[in-house]
Image (cartoon, rainbow, N blue to C red):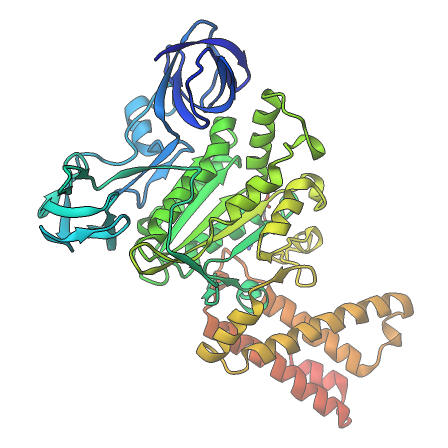
Length: 538
Ligand SMILES: Nc1ncnc2c1ncn2[C@@H]1O[C@H](COP(=O)(O)OP(=O)(O)OP(=O)(O)O)[C@@H](O)[C@H]1O
Ligand SMILES: [Mg+2]
């Protein structure tokens, strides 16, 4: 079956084909541009094209591939840098030069690379879908190979294998391969979801202590222009206590992504000491790349993240920024002439986003292990207006909210997370965990220091009205103590040694600051001089 192009509107193309399915892949035009069916209408179908449609003409061919847009999953993913369609960018650069011409493509995984395979099953064993057949070593990583079908094994590989040959054969003749293609818009299956209760240590004190993220949880970082979203995402990507990081540069500056790639090549994972690139997969669909592929990029990324989750790993997906994804969705939707909702976004924006967030979680995998997929997505509301549709939809769907404040960023208080307006739904569970595992006073200290910060805010309001002279000595002392918590505890310069703080270090620091305040306040109450106390605390 082959069709022809009968209409072109920006990134969407109409083809005269009837027997297609929604989300089927197609190659369109003489160049073979990649696309996906987004609307079926009787005798024709509308295709969202992921590459530049400039130069495409009516009457050019359209070739359906009979499969949905999929990610290729298997050994060789780790350390890769992909675009939104999972094309390996460094290899594309070597092969085709620095500019990707439409229609250029290469396999996502190195097909001929040899991997030493250790089987966990033998001939005669029964295997179920999703069960591990064995594993290969991917750098320092144990990469499980899952069976894509169930049956009795009649042959299984030993020693070296590559992606071109089957790993095993079943009694019904089906061949099992090391790599598989998974439709990116379909969540990968698992046995059941478990509640997120353990902390995901980010190394950022304000997050880990006040607004913790749980493994399997979701968080958003909304912030206006230049408030530190990218730096925060990248700092967390470097330091988070997880097995795998998938980082999506979604519609943001290409040079920031290039700098990050360079930096990651020379840094090590603070937890394992191994090169950071060995635990990281990057998906780059920066502002200078195709808008429609940006829409697909976050799905490609989450599918790869789920794949490692299924191996029992703790995976963190970071995306900068989800607003650019929503804008891509809006662009495609308007080309489809769909009924626009609020601010021109399609009416299904919120349900798409909540569907996306629901792919995070702690799960019992088909293989019986426990894995987690956590998400931290930045949001860039135009004009810093948090009431706009993307921020609101993300707010409703995520479990933690790190609001970046423009005033704090102007004062160079970084990370500019506003402690009065951020929240986390994981605080209670994670607090209990940290009280047992890190510090007995964890929750108590959190309550005390948050109260101090809240009292400070009230006092500042009062002093604005009555003037600083209207405050008591104890108020001045509290203001001073809160100021120390802000500057020494909440601030963390990403470009210094302090960029990462381990939980024990975090607890020690806040315990010291709270103790100094309490002891000082007690001495003040006994009549000691404020000036002496302030001098001592300097
Ligand atoms: N944690 C941090 N430590 C030190 N400096 C920081 C930190 N976060 C942000 N900055 C400073 O703020 C600047 C802007 O940060 P960043 O590029 O991350 O903002 P952004 O919110 O991503 O901006 P945009 O809206 O343009 O994408 C950085 O170049 C850096 O100077
Ligand atoms: Mg940015």
